[in-house]
Image (tube, rainbow, N blue to C red):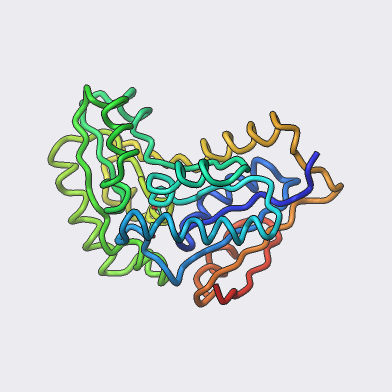
Length: 262
Ligand code: DGL
């Protein structure tokens, strides 16, 4: 048994789409979430910058004695998780675009991936594509501008709608039947995506799969917590907490959000 919290970080609020699955699957666990919104979007940064920011986030979560760290950011996972695993003794769980299940189930042989520039340019993404999806066509689309819009709470603005339509068009033209969300911010675009995409197109978000993996890891290493009360969820952000508060208000559980000069 280990009563220390599960640490989670993202470049901002997007990782809450993973946090909510973890909190639902592991209701007795305390969680500590770090939103590095001041430095978002990570996807526009170099690999070295993403590693440096991921190290800073990890060090902070370690100082709070987290028992494991979930890197709830595709960009940080694809660019920095190997470094983190090499340099820190605790387990890391990451998230990367779920190309494998999409490639496995595609009938049209075309899969769309909407992700950040940093994710699409990463070595991990190209290795995963080569290993698991070489038999299908992947239409990669960088979601430039979307993370910043979501960070400022504009999940359904004129600008968001226009960008999204523009990004989806080449994938639709190529006859994709699966759209992989390769950024943890993008599940917050689900209402728009469902509005713009025909019903037969499956949208893949692997937040739940990451939660399942987290649960297994904590259980198998005998680190589950049971303090005889529901888990406590503490969030820290280094930007205006307004949007984070709004998102969390719509999700179940008791949470506390604080500003951190980080
Ligand atoms: N949530 C991050 C991801 O999954 C967004 C990256 C960014 O800040 O550009 O990639």
